[in-house]
Length: 465
Image (tube, helix red, strand yellow):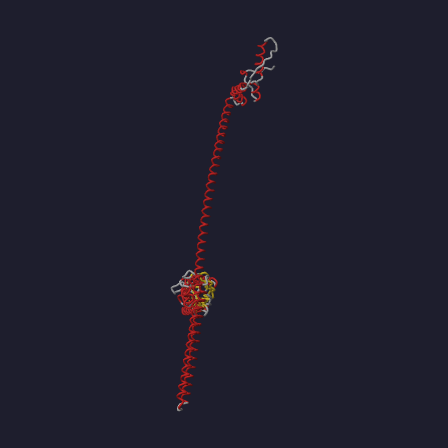
C-alpha cells in the first residue's frame, strides 16, 4: 500500500506539472501580441522599462493578463493644410504663407515614448488638431525672425528653418515632420511683387546690354574680316604683276588705293562702333531709369502701406478713447441713478416712519381712552349709561360756553322794540324780548336728550308747556 500511494502521488505531481506547463504555454501563446509594420505596439501597466509604457515596432511580446494591457499607435502619415495669414515679418510687414505639412508618429525610441504618453487613445483628427497648433506657432515664429527679402530670395533656407523649428516641437508629443511644401508667399502691401518687378527689370536691362555688346562685337569682326580679305587680295595682285617693269608702279598705285580703302573701312568701322556705343549707352540709361522708377514705386508703396497702418492705429486709439468715455458716462449715470434711488428710498422710509409714528400715537390715545372708559364704567357699577351721563356732565360747561360764544358773535347794530301795549306786564316789552331770545336757545336737557342721555334731577327738569 505504501508503494502504491507513493506512485499515485508521483503521477499526480507529474500531472500537475504538465498542467501548469501547458497552461503557461497556452497563456503565453494566446497573449503574445505582434507589432505590425505600420503600427507601434504599446504595452502599459506593470512594465520593467523604467517608464509608463513599453513601445515595440516590429516583432512582438507576451502581454500578461491582469497586470498588463496593450494598444496600438498608427504610423500612417497625416497631411495637414496650414493657411497662415497676416503673419508679421521682422519688418512688420504682414505675410500670408499657405503650406502643407506631412507628419507621422516617430519610431525613434525616445520619441515613441512621448507618443505613448501623449497620443495613446486619441483619434487622428485630435492628433492633427494638436499638431496644427504647434505648426502654426512655429511657422509664425520663423516668419517673424526673417525679413521679406530673406524669405523670398532663399526659399530653401526658409524651408530649412521651418522644418527644424517645427520638427523639434513635434518630437515633444511623439511626432516628426516628414515633408513641408510652401505653396506661395504673398504680402498685403505687394512688397514681394515689387521686388520681383525690380529683379525682372534689372534682368531685362542686363540682357539688353549683353545683346548690344554682342551686336557690336559681331559688326567689328565682320569689318575686320573684310579688311583682311582686301589686304590679301592686294598682296596677291601685287605678286601677280611682280617682275614686270610697270608692275611696281601699278602695285604702288593699287596699294595706295587699297590703303585708301582700308582707311575708309576703318573710318566706317569707327563710325559704326561709335553709333553702337551711343545706342548701348542710351539703352543702359533707359534700363537704369526703369530700375530707378521701379525702386521709387516700391518705396512709394511701402510708405503708403506704413501711412495706412498708422491711420488704422490712430483710428483704433480714437475708438478706444470713445469707448472709455462712453463707459465713464454710463458709470456716472448709473451712480447718479443709484444715488437718486437711495434718496427716494430714504424719503419714502421717513414718510412711512412718520405715518407709523402717528398711527402708533393715535392707537396709544385710543387705547388709553378705552382703559379710562372701562374704569369709568367700572366705577359706575357697570352701568354704561350712567358712565355716559357722567361724561356728558363734564361737557355741559363746554356746550354752554359754545352757546354763549354763538350769541356773543352776533352783530346787532340796531334793536327796535315794538311795545305790545300790555302795560308793562311781566317786565315790559324789552324784558319779554330778551326772555324770548334766551328761550330760543336749545335747553341743556334737549341737547342731552339728542345724545340719548338723561341728566340728573339736581340739574333741573324740563317743563312741559
